[in-house]
Length: 294
Image 1 (cartoon, rainbow, N blue to C red):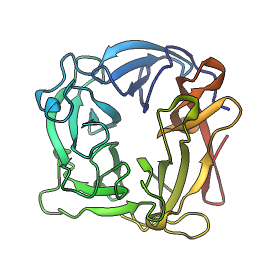
Image 2 (spheres, rainbow, N blue to C red; image 1 turned 90 degrees about the vertical axis):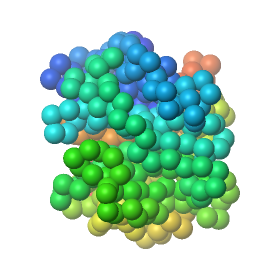
Image 3 (spheres, rainbow, N blue to C red; image 1 turned 180 degrees about the horizontal axis):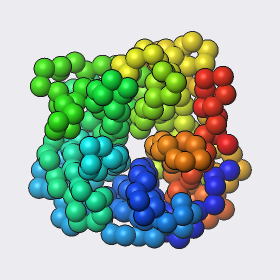
Image 4 (tube, rainbow, N blue to C red; image 1 turned 90 degrees about the horizontal axis):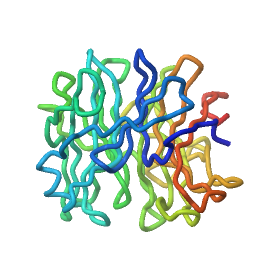
């Protein structure tokens, strides 16, 4: 079961960062919703990342909606990658914004990092930044179509790498149309890279079938294998969290290292609350080289 959280916990696709004052939580919609917490238990709305959505977003979503933020702290500032897309298509783009404080209204948009059109075979949403042990920056992303992709970034700018233009394939479900894998998150631990993804269907209330899967690799670019040795590019993935009791469709996850361990941060639908979406936070344990939800 999720740990106890209170206050405003109606967060979709949550990404959390730790600050000197506590925690900031960012989530989908409303110019990137923001919540703050001093104790990782009570969360209160703090406003929105953007006081006005960047103009380019409207080329990808008619109402200017922005989704699935990924936020982290590097080199003295906060970095947020986020998505804009026409729902149900891969006319999509990932943008970057930076902030000195991470607070509402402090974010400066840096523009589009990667975009896709209906002519492409992948989808530029659900970004996640990995800074590896060598100091290289990688952005994983993707949803449905042919699965999860990765590109290298320039650490100086956070934008696309000036010389490495490769697009790596990390995960897909080739035998299971519509290839329902999305929301990648990659963390490094003990020399291994772990790719967390969400399988199946989000956003259907108590009918949601989302579940969180994982694979691991010795390189950021893969290949990622599950616990049975099946490549994630061949539909592999080891399940670590799925529907149970009143917790329906957990997914849209991120991972945050904290002082008491690694945190799995996600959303789910509460069958005891009419299918309302809520924030879930669990500690991750590690057993024989694999994460386990506590």
